[in-house]
Amino acid sequence: MKSWLNALALTSGLVHLTAAIAPSPTRWASECTTVGKTIYCYGGIFTTPAQNFPQSDTWSIDVSTDFSINSASWTNVTHNGDFATTACGFEAMVPLKDGVSFLVNGGMSVPFNQSEVNQTTIFNTVTKTWTTVNSSGIAQARQHTAAIDGNGRVWLWGGVSDYQTGYTNESYWGAFTTLDPGTGLWTGTSGSAGNADARVGHTMTMTSSGVIHIVGGLVATRLTTLDSTGRSQWSLSAASMSDVPQYNTNNGEWNLVTASGSIPPSRNLHTATLAADGNTIIVFGGSVANNLSSVMGDLYIYDTTKTYWTAVNANGGPSPRAGHSAVQVSTTMFVMFGYDYTLGSLSDIHALDTVNWRWVTQFSATGYPTLGSGTNGTNTTTSNSGGTTSTSSGLGTGAIAGIAVGAAAVVIGAAGLIFLRLRRKKNGRPAYAQAATGNFSQQPPMQNRPMPPLHQLSGQPEEILFNNASQSESKGSFYGQSPAQQQFGSHGLPSTTGTEPTDATPPYTLGASQPPHTYGNTFTSKPDAVDVPHFTLQPSKPNEDD
Image (cartoon, rainbow, N blue to C red; front, side):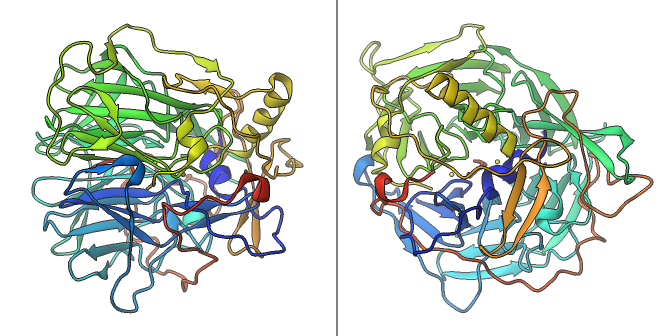
């Protein structure tokens, strides 16, 4: 299974547009967080039928007062000074302890296959200024996650550094890197009993006790054999949702928990937020590991004190999606952005009342009263069913209307696109996993996507990766293969010992010399703008650690 998000993010540029296309209000692979009483969302990817455009804009929404979800109003946040923000997706983002700033690190940016000059940046929401943190000694990663502890330290974990991030080798990170924003000091941290296996496409949530919980994603395992060029080979496999690695930031100990209850199906590109009680993790959506279009609309809660999963059935929620964003504001979880089964970007916003476990159309800044049994239209179940992939003939009205607003990890390849196309041709309808309840009676028109050519050697589709609609790179894709076939080599220089092991900290000696940074095509688009009609364009990804 070869970096499947490469294809999802950059199977673009196969067909060049001859005329300018109006910016779409939709995006995926954006990151969002809360600072004070405001949600901020940065970057992400805006998709057209032919290309994907990483974004460098910042949007905010005021959550200090009540508002109707369908009329939520977003603000394009402008900054003072001439600081050049980086267009990227799949970055990591966290609020800082000062209460007025947020930090953005890494991601998949333009220009393609170059590391960012300003890999780590901080935005002060009061002064509206960006500053940079010296990160020249660490390798840039994408599809990693971040959290902040009670002392203000930023914890980064997981993800991959490869040719897409300007890294000469390919390494998946299983050890923590921490940053003290006050001093700008980076530190490598390893657990006292080793590290958990590296992951991508996971979520990472720190509870009030200072314990980090890692949920879902793809587990990266370095194989013992090298490829023909002497490079390390890796395999990616779907992580079981019953396996929840925990890391105690207080004593540096790892612990692999085997959860019980209603175990969710394996997934990646989902979201997880921490409920107001400081101990409950709320998981929504995501994608099946080996099928780009098999998106989920299910909702689960994980009790970290009992290590127990519970499935929540709530009517009127978001349509199935992955690559979306989610943030927790007191007792409300907001879900925004993402992509649907057509691989089309979404722009809607939804709010979950986590007191009564119901999707609401009116956000209450002061919280929600507890409703009596049978009045909220929800049904919480605790069956031990893990769920199965199912087929649906329609899409939720949230994706059809696309009227509310969007913005808050990851590796799906182009072979999944061919699989999807063949399956649609055969069955004539899309695949869903754990579809949400609600009105899915109407299906939007099928939307064509450009297909990558077959790889001459592997027989798998090629990923055509564009910097600025005029330059491309081709890398073999191994997405959708059987577990025995899911192995691939590093893209760095040949080595007789292979690349860094999964339990290594991102190196401080590599990436110090970074190439000049230029920018590809980007758009500034308002999240609640009007979508471009499907008949005109035929259009074809935040994690949560607040």
